[in-house]
Image 1 (spheres, rainbow, N blue to C red):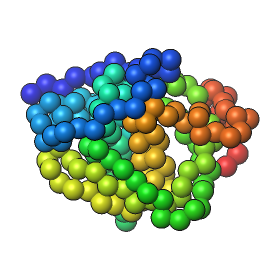
Image 2: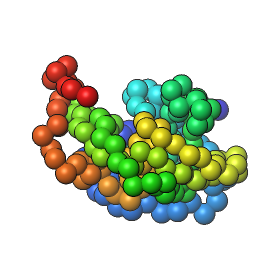
Image 3: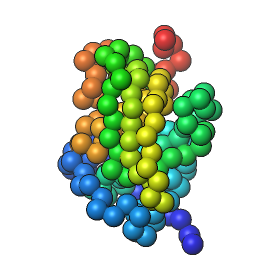
Length: 173
Ligand code: NI
């Protein structure tokens, strides 16, 4: 079984702005194949996450990394979620840097919920129900936004932090 690196849609492609469709059968072989290819593509591009519309597929599928710093919340590694949803667990917003494989070479500071509960199902049919904070929560919110046609730039109330990665050295936290 070969995996494939998929072409990433960049900002301006209409598929990034269309709400994605729910997946009727998360365990279907073509969904597993899609998820495997999305993982391969994310890893090849050194991304933290990827949503199906970013590979020109209008379905509600996301993949993302759980970094070791979030080990108390989930097994570190990569995670696939079909039909993901989340809810904030409190109103606290945190500001943090984001980038997006569909908006190359740029970073900006975005305010997101600091603590969320997310749910979804894996291609193995396992129901996921997880509390996430910090970067873990941020990545999930960013990827679920893609399923609704929302880019992180849309979430920025103040564009003054926008920077090219090459110029990022001076950024403050
Ligand atoms: Ni993105």
